[in-house]
Amino acid sequence: MELQNNGNSSLTKELYDNYTAILKEELVPAMGCTEPIAIAYAAAKARAILGEMPQKMHVSCSGNIIKNVKGVIVPNSGNQKGIEAAAILGAVGGDETKELEVIAGATDEARAKTKKLVKENFCDVSLAENVPNLFIEVEAEADGHKSTVRIENHHTDITLIKLDEKIIFENASHEDKKISKTSNAKRNLMTLRGILEYANELNVDDVKEIFDRQIQSNSKISQEGLDNKWGARVGKTVLENWGSDVRSRACARAAAGSDARMSGCPMPVIINSGSGNQGITVTLPVVEYANEWHLSREKLYRALAVSNLVSIYIKHYIGSLSAFCGAVSAASGAGAAITYMAGGDYESVGATITNTLANVGGIVCDGAKPSCAAKIASSVHAALLAHYMSMSDKEFRGGEGFVEDDVEKTIKNMGYIGKIGMKETDKEILNVMIDKIDVDSCL
Image 1 (spheres, rainbow, N blue to C red):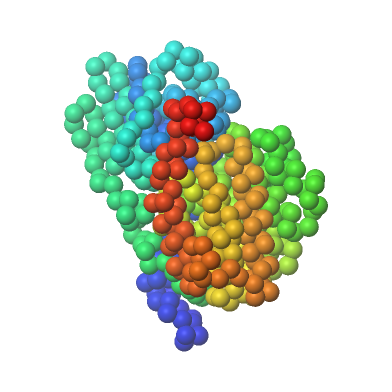
Image 2: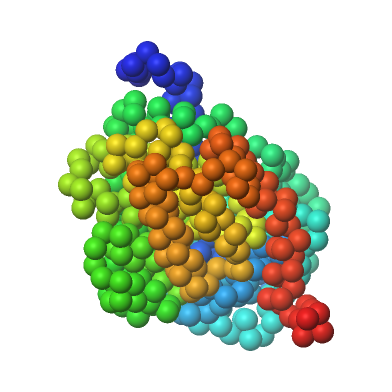
């Protein structure tokens, strides 16, 4: 395409294509919480490689995977929880060709068989040490043969497939790239200024299909969360007690999608940064404000480009899984997009991001579960406060905590804190969750 810029833009065709490729890679459908789904995917793949139903399975996971699967219902499982249920359902009723929708077609028979095999200790689980934060390895055994499937760093990135001792596929993990093994897009080329230039110069036909799908899917699960009794009904509680203005609706719609998703609703969502909760959070507040302000569909597409890419940009420095709550980065993206829709420039959008991170950057991730909906509501609320502050020239200043005068540096500081600074926090959260330590004796 021919880029139509104003002469001041630094956006080349290469950068434009890179941002488009990132959106197409990231905004894909997933059914339920992505961590149990990734386990189900690996197990379904292991069964396919083995060529028959396993007689025994073993799953080895990183602490972050264990943390994110422990408290969430495996979708389409009949309200079952846990790594064992996810892996067995993937092997019994999964279709590995559907990747993050691997168990969308699971039947009543598959669910019943999964419950039976869980009780029979068909699958055992162990903690993998000294591995990437996102690490899953499934071993499936039958009739003296064993298949092995390993996933690292990204939910569908298989890095090893073995049948017995024969390596069928091997691809080195490249965590530093923050991209899929099949990706040609480069996250390290992202900047906030580049994201805004991309949004301004966007040919909406390049992204219309993926954004329409994101709006439709994520709006449907949000409505499901409002209409029915999923989780703790955080979204419904917001609307019933905070009123129904656009600010409350923005918080409630995002929270309601998580209410349903974290409690096993099988409806698919379009994810962001490998997370359905983050995909919901970058979408619904932006849609609510676009509707409230009667903006055109084209303006909404441009704003969703900002929202999605800002979230991906922040998470690029943190990694797929950590002790940093991804609702914060997603809400920062949503707030940035709302400021963009309101006519905010680079400085205003940057101030919204800074104000959000300075406020709720310390929310920790203690796994996927119903309370994620409340963290989303709190993060979106903080992003809206940040938006209204920035639009009236109010901003937290450089030197205040980890905040810098340059928003790009503030984002990198948050990334360092989330990836490096919170490593020990992440370990201790897991220790508490799996009762590995006696908390009373430490206090």
